[in-house]
Length: 194
Image (cartoon, rainbow, N blue to C red; front, side, top):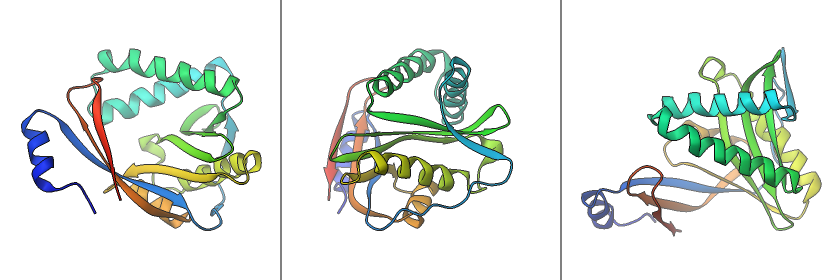
C-alpha cells in the first residue's frame, strides 16, 4: 500500500517534495560477494579518510542537484555526528579504497535490536562493478558479529538501482516510507505505510 495520490498531490501543491522509499529487512543469510581485484575494504580511521568521505559525499550531493555552498555545512555536521557515534561504540564507517583513493563508503550502526545501514555511496567512476554489494556484505557481517540477534534494516529509493542490490543480498520489503520535505534542510513530514 502506498500513500493515496490525492494526499501526494495536495502535498506537492503546498510546495513539498514527496519521496517514496522502501524499508527492507534482511530475511535470509546476507550475501557476501567478493570485492573486485585491486580494491580493499577498511574502516575509516585517519583524518585523510574522513576528508575523503566528506569529499565523496559532496560529489554525490552535487550529482543529486544539491547546492554545494548550502549543502557542505550540513554534510560536515553529519560526518561529525557519524564520527561521534563511532567513538561511542555504536557503529563503523567502511570505505572501499583503490590504492589510497576512497571510491565507495557506507556506515552501519547498531544496538542490540537493530542494525541500520547509512549513506551507501559509490564514486561514479566505480559504479556497476559489484563494489556496493561486497561492501554491504562486509559491513553487515561486522555488525552482525557485534549484534547477532538484531534485525538488519536498510532504506532505499523505491525506484532506484540500490534496492535491486539489497534484494539480491537477501533483503525483503517490509514497508514503504513516504517523506515530504518543504525546502532544503527544512523539517519535513514522514509517514510509514505498510
